[in-house]
Image 1 (spheres, one colour):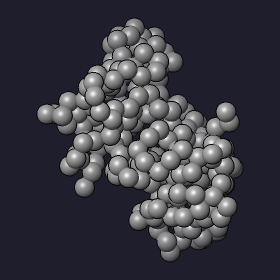
Image 2: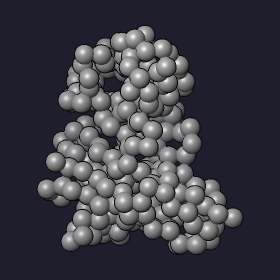
Image 3: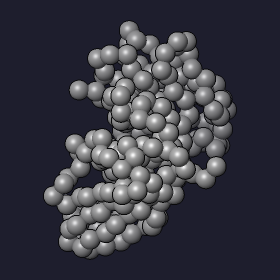
Length: 114
Length: 114
């Protein structure tokens, strides 16, 4: 089966610009996660969706970050305006159900904010 | 609050030598524990997981991990390391049994000497 797809793979922007990342989860997976991985750290959950509803966005900086999963399939994460500290790899993951089980990760989008 | 500590940031072993990567967790209830591996430019791949039952868990690529409740540890082991095992390894605990949110350690980078 196809894995989790993400695009773009790399993005370089200047601070205060906006950027958007796209994720297409494994077909049939109801739960979708966005993680932020800063260099030298483990991934940190930004937001979790169950179908098209938000389950957890407690660590999402809502003044600049937004995410949606309108049809319960693919998802978009947006940053506006970007700050230097947003430089990181943004990982998308999906799982079949909303419970503790294996999460399947995409290759990530590496963002550099100058 | 739940947390994961990986005490070793960087480990170097010779090819063919044994490997042990340490992981300590903090969690009030029965933990759900994972080890993921991340190769350069790749997403995270699940090596193994512990939910319940036998405390010695077998995973892919010849890895195993042992859950020790008394020590709050879930160390990853491999009897003989191959050059292709060079990567970054992350230990994680499920922050919620209901939502599947993962809390990751900061990772251990494994270098393999020929």
